[in-house]
Amino acid sequence: MTTLPSEIYSVATVREIDRTAIEELDISGYSLMTRAGAASVAAARERFPDARRWQLICGAGNNAGDGYVVARLAALDGIAVSVVALVDPAILGGDAATAYGDFAAKGGVAMPWAGELDSEAELLIDAMLGSGLMRDVEGDFAAGVLAINEHPAPVMALDIPTGLHGDSGAVLGCAVQANLTVTFVGLKAGLFLDQGPDCCGELVFAGLDIPVAASVASKVEFRRIDDKMIKQYFPRRRRTAHKGDFGHVLMVGGAAGMPGAIRLCGEAALRSGAGRVSIATDAGHAAIIVANRPELMCHGVNGAADLKRLIDSADVIAAGPGLGQSPWAAELMAVVADCELPSVWDADALNWLAESPGTSKNRVITPHPGEAAVLLGSTTAEVQADRPSALTSLRDRYGGVVVLKGAGSLVSSASGAPWLSASGNPGMAAPGMGDVLAGIIAALLAQGLAVEQAAASGVEIHARAGDKAAEAGERGLLASDLLSELRGIINP
Image (cartoon, rainbow, N blue to C red; front, side, top):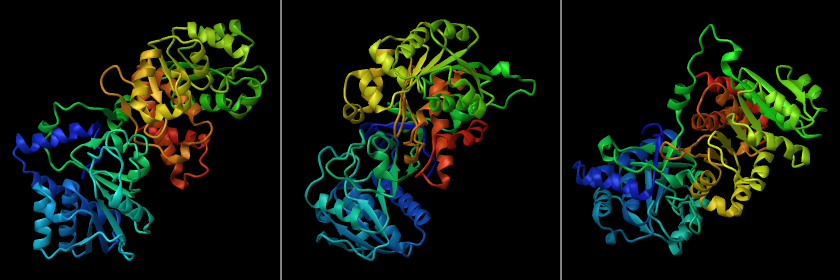
């Protein structure tokens, strides 16, 4: 097993990598299957060390073959193993038939599915259907999924949880809810999109020692934002550095009675390394914000003229948090829209953009699925059903860089496949998280990162800070909890 690679592929591309390894690099399919089984046993032993009674639920095709290899190797390793077969192993073909034959030769027995699982099993292993599933799970397979999900034992899925679409992450009728998924050869997009993260649990990658040459020409669907990017963009600062080297961010937002969002945004920018942060807000908020965070420079603005004076000394603009949709907000956004500075548009700025569409190559927009639906004139369900297409449509319609927030946030790219963040947790579904993200991205722009670099690395920094803050528990996580974690993330 290795750490997760950066490249994420379609199921068809992973299948092509597998074919190349077998036909052009002369690695037998059964050798790859045996490696997959060995990697799975090792992952299960590490993740569930106290589980000594395993039950495998095997179905059809090579996914079943992986299961029979796991059963054979686990038994040799001293595990009490039982196997339930939803498909008569006598009708298996190819490498799967070889896997079953080797399992049976070692005394292994596959019991026909009778509607029940071993109530005393300490680990269940899903080897029913692989990543090529294209239609709803039905019949005995659906019954197997239900039985697995109702069983109290933890679950490990081989390659992909049964019922999960390998490309879209959609649930096809029903799907196994795994605690651990060991995926092989290449990362599949469906593991990260839609319901994928919920179904997969912890994700472990096993490359099966396939040489890089097998995947060098393969089309990448997404690029995972990884440690390399974070380290590349955040080197140690010079000892002679001063605040003027790190940019001046101007935040625009906080309508009357709504100072919280813009204050979160402002502090996130400071915590992310911006040299100076000014806030253009309702006149009644300036003293309140400064009293709680004196490092922020707050200015009450009454309209366009006040904002234009502040823009003259800014390097980056972040607009939208707490802005509202009043005539005051519209007047300020008209000024922001005419400005050529790098900018981040979030929250109410996106509502303004939907009503007054325009493009900008120097702008990052950060919609959640509901805001994306408004921007595209569609529905939230439609956006979530095909997040990659929604990302492309947003980029084509509004220009610049798009961050489509959510589980597995996506970032558009002009230099290759879109970026994807695999970090983050459900506790981050809380008020103010988007305001913190907007502040982080704005700070990175102020420090000289290009819009795509700032958006992609900012999304990952935000998610990792959320994961760090959630170590004490996801439920009850606050956006402000991320602020104290940011320094540890951006100083790798």
